[in-house]
Amino acid sequence: MIQLSQKEKMMLQDQKHHEEMCIQKYTEYANKAQDPQLKQLFMYHADQERQHLNTINQILNGQVPNMQQNQQSQSNAQFIFDQSLNYSQDDIKFCEDLLMTEKYVSSTYNTTIFECVDTNVRKALNHIQKEEQEHGEHIFNYLKSKNMYNVQ
Image 1 (cartoon, rainbow, N blue to C red):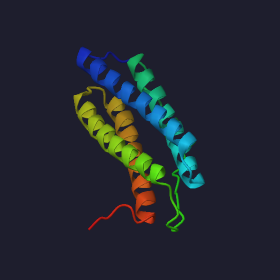
Image 2 (cartoon, one colour):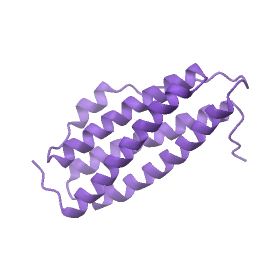
Image 3 (cartoon, helix red, strand yellow):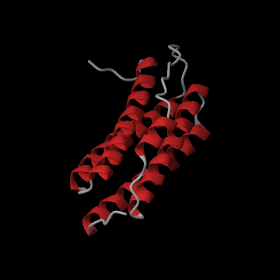
């Protein structure tokens, strides 16, 4: 059982809200996306965001999550996107919104990690942050495959 400070609780409540928003966005956009590959990607991310939310809730309830169990149950998914230039403008807008969201959420985890006292909580949050960054990478790769993200 861990004891959280008021500041830790406040920051974790913010992260909980961010995870809820990510679940909502990924689910909504998966239902609206035209590209089947993008639908699959968004649903995969929504599932991971649900796992993140469960981890945050465990921490808020004073429990240290078992990160080895979480890491073993997750595959390191690789997404290879069709290089065709067939895409929906709405699909691109969904990706741009989610990429911006992932950048923001990842950065807020960084601050929260530094404010947590318990090493195991920090490790759990660091694991979540790494997955948020992977979500951003998947979206970036999708946009790049459609020539919609210029890195020059």
